[in-house]
Length: 181
Image (cartoon, rainbow, N blue to C red; front, side, top):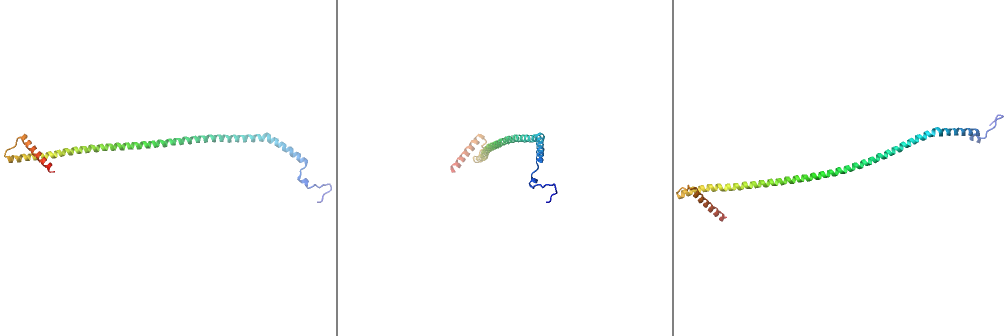
């Protein structure tokens, strides 16, 4: 490097280190900037951050309250569901009992109706048996009376005597049938 007369060469290490006046002016600017920052910008920034922190804390408190309400509602819902299940079970049990009662009543009515029908049938059968037994007895009596009239040669018009003869004849006939069996 060739230098002109009056020029001095600057050592290379000086290029990296600033001059003292530059350091002083930089420090003054830095102090003024720090004072302005601390006086005007930092309080606003702090206020915004505090406001955001308060909103976040409020949101967390609201979320906790909502979570508690949700837990309470869930608990209430589970209790109501359990009560509904229990009520449904009792209704089913009552319906089963009522159904069994209806079945028992119907069975009882059917049995009593069946017994009544059987009794009526037995009575009708007995009456028909008596009627059936009396009808031939009367016919047999009439025939026996006619036959006896023809055999004796007299008319058996006396009803009382005719009945006694017929009854005695039929009794003898029935007794002879029972002894042969």
